[in-house]
Length: 472
Ligand code: HEM
Image 1 (cartoon, protein in one colour):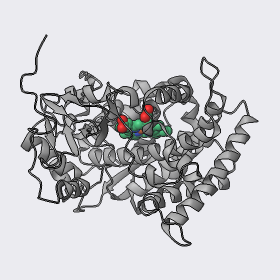
Image 2 (image 1 turned 90 degrees about the vertical axis):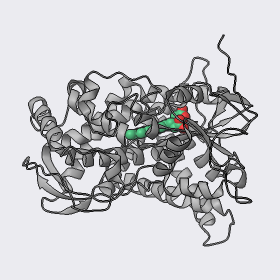
Image 3 (image 1 turned 60 degrees about the vertical axis):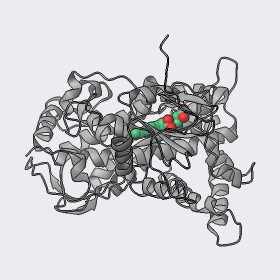
């Protein structure tokens, strides 16, 4: 059996910056928060595949590359997802705790397994076919609103679209006004929740007070929808499916659990998908040859119409474009796990309760896995096969995105419909930054034209230029 001769005492000899006296890792933490991509790259390039945020305060570690991804993501008993930063501050048993803290991303062990098993059928390939029409309809509505010659922020438009797809597919309400109200409420809770929970002091006007009230209102709405779905056994939206699902032991999701899961499905689903759509459009606008080939493929197969469900698997370049966009700009750039006991990570020993960060972004740019890693080459996916730990925009293992197929379906439908109808030109010389928190969030101003195939690359400024090498 292979031995690991250089195991260190927990944390002691793991490489990393020294850390300032008294301040410890906090200065690096700020950098990580402000410029995550640059910081992750710096850590990997300077210290290698395993590093600590600060040697005098090894509260957070990094583990980069497929082997570590595998170790972190396929050992759910050793590496938990649960990080209790806010949970301890909020009184249990309230609408806010049910909405914010009851979800798969905060569950480990048997509870996670059981709840995920109950949710899986709603995202099974056979089921997501039912969401196809909603995805097409919502996209059509957005594209009908766009005016040729106008300018708009593509990111905001994509967020609006993915938000309406999420609300429609999750709740399936026909009353458009009610759907819109619900969408607004979900957005408001998302916006104020973090601030509110940072300072959980309840007085009229405080952010915490606001989020508590909004959570109560949202919970009441969700309970009413759940009740309504019980009366509609024929409905096929996600809530209806979740209400109807029982496991083999006759167990089902409780209403309290449903409320938390529904909120998280909304939160986890729309920003990630909007970011992927925005970056993929940017990449296409910068690569006119790929865009021309893609349009040829779409026109030959779809003749200007939205893709039917069975056509989605017959568009290899579209598939390559989507996968390559998610490789270069994975909406979740990195993820976190916490050790439940002292354990080994590579050549090092790590203490219990250490947070370990893995990174999709770093893995996806490794030259040993991807030739010319910084180039946008969708055709590489015609022949390239990568393991789930080498290509992981949706993460991998036990907590892998439950809706990966749903998201791929949405990305393909929206891109196919948009590109056939419009040409988007990124506004020249805009500063595109990757100071993106953990999620890529560019504001992307574009001009709208009819699809006249007059593709022209536009010069952009800012850190994004180091992220993709563009063929001249
Ligand atoms: C391009 C779009 C998307 C990307 C890149 C993405 C990415 C991810 C990633 C990286 C994780 C794992 C996080 C971790 O392991 O810590 C995850 C989990 C999850 N995602 Fe997505 N996601 C996308 C779309 C969606 C959509 C549309 C939904 C819902 C409709 C969704 C619902 C979830 C849920 C519920 C989980 C938790 C799974 C679990 O813990 O078992 N995601 N997603």
